[in-house]
Every structure is written in C-alpha cells, then in structure tokens.
Length: 145
Picture 1 (cartoon, helix red, strand yellow):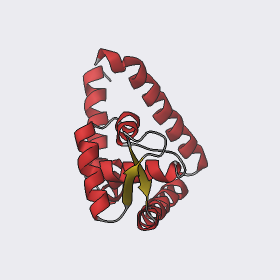
Picture 2 (cartoon, one colour; picture 1 turned 135 degrees about the vertical axis):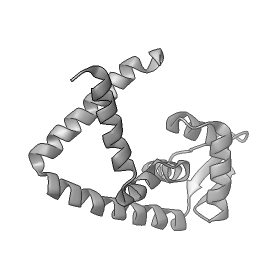
Picture 3 (cartoon, one colour; picture 1 turned 120 degrees about the vertical axis):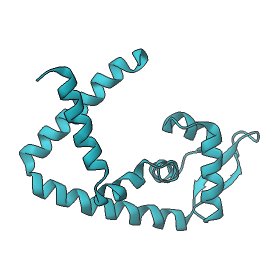
Picture 4 (cartoon, helix red, strand yellow; picture 1 turned 180 degrees about the horizontal axis):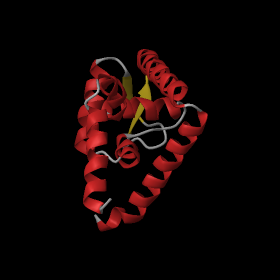
C-alpha cells in the first residue's frame, strides 16, 4: 500500500474512533480543565503555579488562566500566594476537585477495562508498543513540523 493510502486509512480509522460515543468520555481527559486537575492530583504537596501548569501541559498561559478561573468558580481548586515566593500564586486541589477527578478516573478505568478484556493481553501489549513507537517517531520529528 502506498504512503497516501496508508495515511488516509490511518486518519479515517482515527476519525471513526473519534466519532464514537464512547470516545467523548475519553476525550474529556484531553481538555485543559481535566488535565489541570489530573496534574494537581499527581502533585498534591507541591507548590504548583500557573506557569508550571502551562509549561507541563503545553497549554498557553491565557488558557490556563481561563481554565483556573472556571475551576475556582466550581470549587475544584483554590489559589493562594505561594509561601516560598510571595510573587507567585499556588494552585491547590480542593476536596471537591479531588472527588470530581477521582470519579472521572474511575469512569475511564471502567472503559479501559472493557477494552483490555476485549483485546486480550497480547493485543494490548502490541497496541501499547505501537503507541509508544508512534510517540517516539513524532517526538523525533516534532521540530520539523
């Protein structure tokens, strides 16, 4: 199969997967707000500031600011002046935010359990290998794109 056909087949498969109802549940984890909450739950004792979130999540600072405002309004995060550096804000996950993100993680885990069971161990290992290879290829070409 030539490169164009391969590319078109791959993009069609990914597009078809994206259009599935179940994917909308998984896609939630790609959104800025959820990514912020996931980052915070993985760093519960760290002084996490908006700049760090922007850098680590590869999201612009204005988008981080907007997402944090929304998360604060919902009571999922709180922001205080950092004790280490009074010029910086420190973002912390609230108990409501922790409950919310843990509930989302549980729902996603259930979907992946179904996927793992349906694919079987050998196919999951191969799929993971291919995903890691894809990331390596794209990481090596990132600067060229």
